[in-house]
Image (cartoon, rainbow, N blue to C red; front, side, top):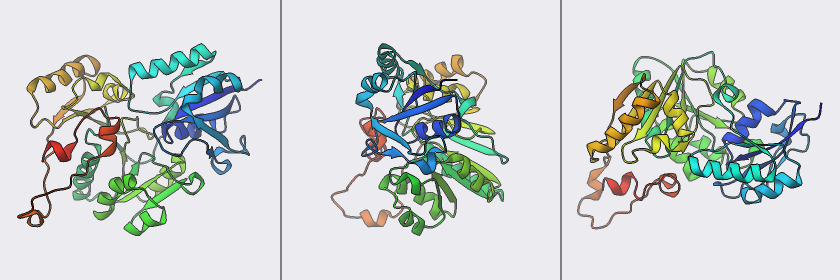
Length: 339
C-alpha cells in the first residue's frame, strides 16, 4: 500500500505530540515535514531521529509556515494536519483554504486519537484562551489535594524551545533542574512556583514516556495545559478556565471551544471589575455548548508578598505575561489591570 504523505502544521508542541501518538510508527503514513510558527528559531531545524522512530532514520525537517502551499506541492502532500492552539476559527479556515487550493486534504485530529490513558487519576486544567488563569488554578488544586495527603505530580504542556533530543523527558524537582535543562524565562515562570512548593513537574517532548515516569511517583496527576490546547492525557476530571475579560472567546477560538464543550467544570475567572453582562455572555454560551457542566465563579486577586519593599517608592516596573498580550487578545494583563 502506498503511504499517504503528511505535513503537520505546528508550533513545537501539539504537532510533535500528534506525530508521536498517531503517526510515529504508523506505516500507513509518511510524515514529510513539519511547519512552524509562533516559536522563534524552531523552523529550519528538524525533529530528530532519536524521537522520530525507525520509519524516519534521518529525522523530519521543519520549515516556516509561510512556505505552506509551496511545500504541499513540492512534496506531493496528501494530508495537512493543523496542530497548534489559541487560533481563531477564521484563521484556521484560512489555512484550510490554502491547503485545499494547493491540492491536499486539511485535517484536525480529535481527542480519541491523541490522548493517552493513565493508570492514575488525572485532573486536567485547560482554558478557552491563553492567560485565562490556568497556572493559579493548577497551584490551588495541588494545594487542596496535598492537604488531603495525596502526592501530586504536575505534567506540563510542552515548551521544547531547546535541543529536542535532550528534552524527550524532563523532570523538575529543584531549582537546579531548571539550570540543568537550560530553561527559558517562560518555562521558569511556569515551573518555579510549583517547585518552590515541593511539587515535581514533568515536561518535554515524548509524553508517553513522560506519563510512564510520572505515574511511578504520583497518587494524582495534574495536567497543566498550555495556551488553550486539549489535554494530552485523558482526564478523570476536566477543568476549563474561561476569562470574564474576554466574553465570547470561549466559542470563537480553536481548540478552546472544544475544551469548553468537553469540560466537566467551567471556571468563569476574573469576575472582579467586569460588567455582569460579560459573565452572562459566558453563561449563555455555556447553556447551549455545555449545559450539563458545573460552573465556578472565581476572582484572581493580586497581592504583593513583600509590600514593605514598596514603601515610599515612586516608580514600579510592571512585567506582564507575554502570550496573554502577544496572541491572547488583551491589551493589558494582570499586572497593569490590577495596579
